[in-house]
Length: 123
Image (cartoon, rainbow, N blue to C red; front, side, top):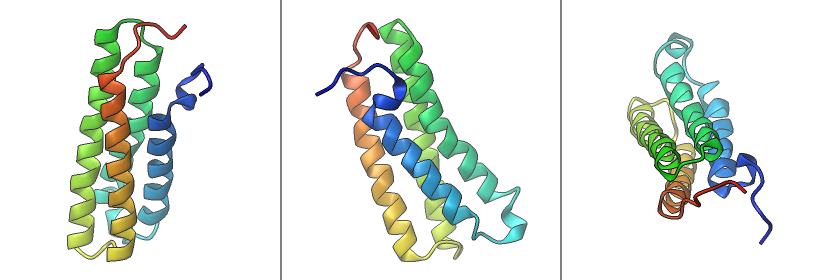
């Protein structure tokens, strides 16, 4: 296993980045009237996930790292809720929803692992 030198080396960041790209692609297909509604909301929440992982990685104290990783997990829960809404109002087909839901589960496991195993320094 290679040494983690950057936030982009974290599996949690890589998989949350992947989730964000997936969300951006599917929300392009949402109705035009949702551009400033659900589409915007879910995009903002999903971008917050890797962003807070990156910021947490840069922090020196364990407490600060956990705080940012926990915020990231909260944003992930928002995305999960918003995906359910998008599916239930007919913006997402079951196949797309299933792929996204599975990715959110993967990201959740990785973030939980980060929180449980925070190293004290990035050295």
